[in-house]
Image 1: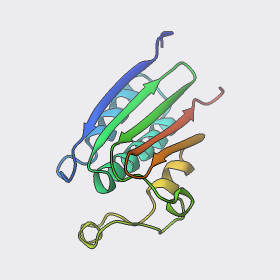
Image 2: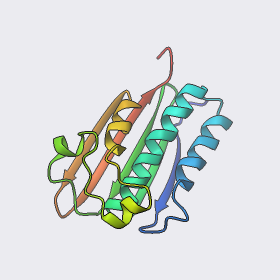
Image 3: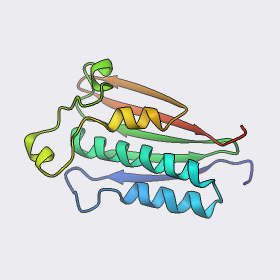
Length: 144
């Protein structure tokens, strides 16, 4: 890979469950094409999918961007949704503010943020109630 980071970005449409997973699927295909290890690809796919779901379910859509550098990749999800009033609570496994309708579709189990954290080497959430959220997750490449 060259010195310049490789960047891909997708728009996440609110409420369109027919497109859910498209961005994370495209990220996974790109990482495989770039020759990234299968373990990193697996972790990145989980991070991207969970971030994509959170933006769709809780924030009315947003953007999902992947930046691939020589020693790591970063996935950033940004939205202009309601924000997260209590990040510590949102990080607890099983906690969810998803509606009953979303739960009936099989989503909103409250595992998104914990799964992102578990599959990242570092994660940061910047959020402000009424303004939106920016989640950044970094995955280091093995040996880096």
